[in-house]
Image 1 (cartoon, rainbow, N blue to C red):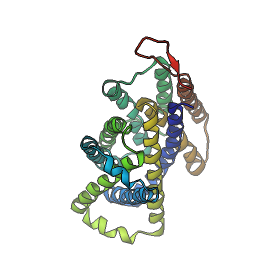
Image 2 (cartoon, rainbow, N blue to C red; image 1 turned 135 degrees about the horizontal axis):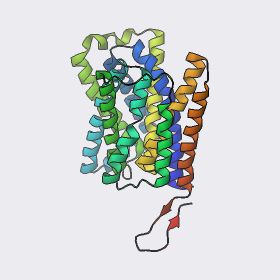
Image 3 (cartoon, rainbow, N blue to C red; image 1 turned 90 degrees about the vertical axis):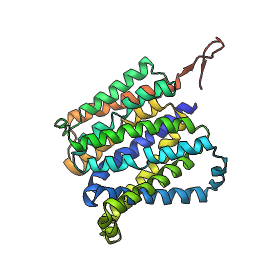
Length: 309
């Protein structure tokens, strides 16, 4: 099995986790206010959990191997990926329908394509373009979408999405040299510190109430914290093994999971349109998987292409 196929498996796992998170986060951000306090507390929890993982797996020695250049990359990822976009996304999510936020977030693959081709020298093959078109088109058929209003909330979510696209490029550049869990720790650790500072300044009253959450609020907080940890850990592993464009494209399929959960717990109905959307998504992911299995790398010396097995 090639690394790219392994990366796609991790990306599929990330998509499953993301689909659950998108569904749950809307309830959580409505139950725990303000959004900055919610995302700050959740990210701190993720930071503490990943530190426990690193200690348990004895990976702390990896920090000594980080070069000065990679250290600056980690700082950038903490700011660009682990702090500012979380505030923007969850503030935006609290102001707009979840379906609008989900559709805007799915444009992540487009921004990554724009950045990955010049900065990572990745290629977009015809078959990948077809798969991406299928995955993205399937999201346009999502139920409940009533159009964009170009509101502040939508622009906040868009800004967060673009920042996360930049983070993907930065992470892809250093993952060959940095353990994925170390990168998670840097992203969530530094990011949570920045968010905590912002929360102390912007929402001190809300932060003071965090110890007085109700049982249901603590349930949402705990669930979303564990989901975010699992998401980041599988996502970075996928990014380490597969091209950024491939990983981002597979993540588009997370909408399928969100729709299934909505049908089971909210609408109690599975429509024909949702079935068609699910089929298109599965075909799109299947195309990526098949393309990865048959991937051909052209050797610069001019020798015949060698297939990854």
